[in-house]
Length: 109
Image (cartoon, rainbow, N blue to C red; front, side):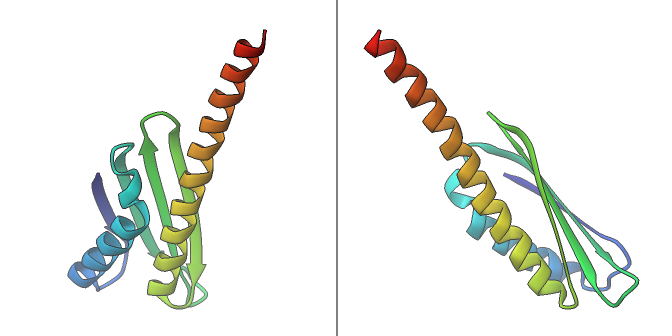
């Protein structure tokens, strides 16, 4: 899993990269064989909020993305990473269910 962090107009370069890396590895580590490149964009919003956009490439699904904004930058990162882990789990479960149901119909015929 390759993680690229792009932070625009923020001063927390090293601490932010370590925090994002830790949160994403915590959320996506169980899918590490399926996840390719991870792109994180962090930008401050004009209303004293920060936005965190995370996009991942998944081998069998393509690209998944989430975006969160919050006044606390670290809370936005936490919520985005958590949502992404849940989204990926649901999509993989959906693929598995479709594959199982298709096989069971073939066996019944």
